[in-house]
Image (cartoon, rainbow, N blue to C red; front, side, top):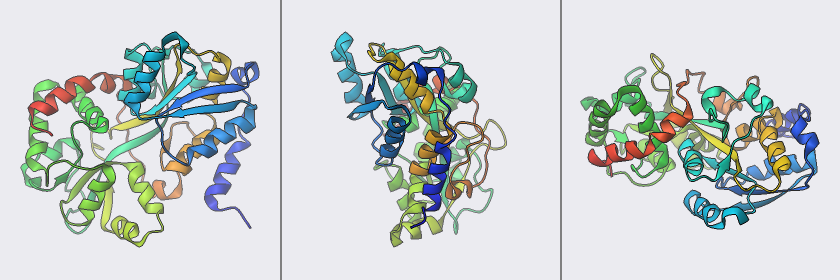
Length: 344
């Protein structure tokens, strides 16, 4: 049986892996990976690393907060070599807790855009997801909404579907608005968003998307990979949802669309340093980038690696160049602002 287009794309990238110095230096044959990514498609990513390097991966998976608490309680006895998680707010939280160590790599510096990595080398972003609007085609005209700021426009009263303020994706989004406008304007914006909500926040990004398709609101705020999964779904109900909605990339006329990251860093008490470095550099190879992109509908971060066709079909867009560490460090203040605004 001929491989599928997705499979061919993944296989095609594997041949492009070039052994880096860290790969060649890897002395240990095991890597202890602490991960809060819960995507089944990552199995292929990890298997490919082992195939390429001979380094086995022992993986511990848990939610972000329990995983960080575990690393903290383990202290110097922690077996963790690498932490991988989603959202800059979470990886920066790990850094703030003293759970990571800096890593200087010419390979990563040349491949990972500067805005997607910690300036001090404590963590690196390896894939992105844009926080976009999924709008009802039959209710929101082309160009009717163009920015995050527009979410607070009274004309969208009762039309906005968005998750809770406790969701880290929304904290990072608000952190980016805070960086752009300062606290007073950001709080006014947050109050406007609350006033325009179609319902009290509940559920995840997929729930917002489904609600927009069902007519509960006109504008869902969600990360692109959730919509990408639905676009690939074989379920008729998912196909119906996708057919009703259109992707809008906010702020194309000014700073660009907010993107967040899946990121990784070397654990502070890593025992297998060479294996950890090899793994991080592997994540920036074309083959690994294709696994992120084709496996979970994420955007690759390395130049020359294209997103899968169903993601590329949404169009190219301008990305907010704000360094991810900036909006991540704004998360705590962003949450306070959202709370004061009544964003539940």
